[in-house]
Image (cartoon, rainbow over the protein chains, first blue to last red):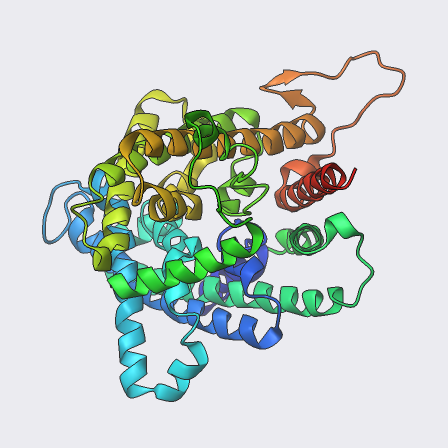
Length: 213
Length: 231
């Protein structure tokens, strides 16, 4: 796995197929927590951190337990167990991260505290878990068959990059919304409708990245 | 684990409550129980929850109908089961219990769809079929309705909310498919020899169009509500 492939995966996850603007994942916090730049940054950091952990753990579980011919079970459990398993793993993970941060890194906990529990119901986390395992692009699936550790590395990096892309979209949106407060928006468009239209314009700008890869 | 989901969900509920009108009517007729989810408390256009699938699967009417059927089935079944179990589930771990029930029904729907729907529609639904499990509107109904009401009312509430969601995504999908692709349900609706030829705006079936169409539809419904309140 050379460095150029890594860079292209990262660039693709952040800009070309941004989780919010191109894949429609994680729109609840995108609309709910983008009134202020500071909150948007906190939420983005928390999501990136949990996405990194979640993509690592779910890929590991997928390879060792769920997949057909998996190391620990051997039977094909993907279709039946993936949804309950992933959602419970993510919920547990969020709780563990919260407990760890509260006792060990209180400063970070105070900064992220409010946003951590909100992440469990964020479909971007579940989305990254599915996009790494059952709905992975063929290339990643082939890589996982050949070399499990390398597949794990790529999956984890994809999780981090997707989180960074989410943070970028949150930051851009919060900047726009701070300006919108002072803009003369027509009455029916105020609030969420104008936020959607601004997001649409941003997504249009991001379409321009599509030609780069 | 329970705590993480509970508090995360409570914050989400508070976000929803900002948009929703307070529930002050304890006594509703059975028909009102069904119809409130379609008009006055529509998940997409009034509460603005469950936005991710609304944008992602609305490139065509067919996939939107499939998604709508999936959500109606999951919502109705999970509401009934949770309502039946409401005296058994302890309050402290209720949200993980809800999630397990919902996840089971989502899995059933996913397997059924994989077996019976054409591959094209399954591809269009993609990861958004399993992602029904994190759709806020389903957990919202489980927590705020099914856990507190009897089976009959929960069934009607689940059906109503599901139908409201399905109608909303079908509306978005019809607009996007008709203007972005020039078709409705796969059939071309544009007359071939019209005075001016309409060239479909393909941006509307791409990602930006989803945001634009939903934003404009939301604004339209806001405007309608406003004019009706103050004639």
